[in-house]
Image 1 (cartoon, rainbow, N blue to C red):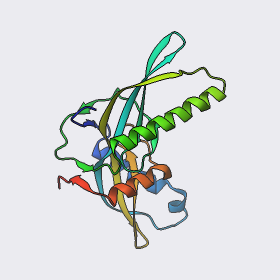
Image 2: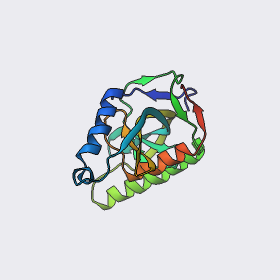
Image 3: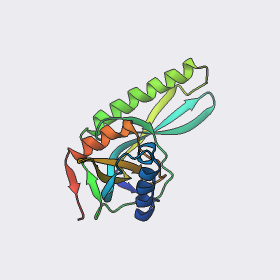
Image 4: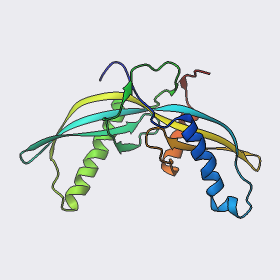
Length: 188
């Protein structure tokens, strides 16, 4: 594992994120039929921990690399693209501490990746059979969080800080784990 974590550079600015949050709530079906609109309270950029693993996969006469990740809070598996821009400095960033260890994350990544290989093989697509862990890295990924109040209840909505996609129910549990866990630093 590389000693220092990397920080993915957010491509979405604060103004773009705010605009998306505000416009998305005014476009919703419920707001158009008179349901009380969200009262936005604040917006912030947070970084969630991911353990990123790169495997060398051999398939017939071809070698390639596959990069997968496990979030450091709930252990959710995903494929990961390491081609983005990175920063080395974690100061002045809202970071959350991983709740699982690198060893646990590697075990989860290995099991999930093996299941994906098996599923692909069952579907008739040729896939690599020999795999070897080449490297692992702790990476912090940016998300915009918009906090709002509606009918006296506080809630939040999240947006990917790189590609601008709204995060759904699958990621909600990860954010709840982050907000109830240990925060490494808060620049405010």
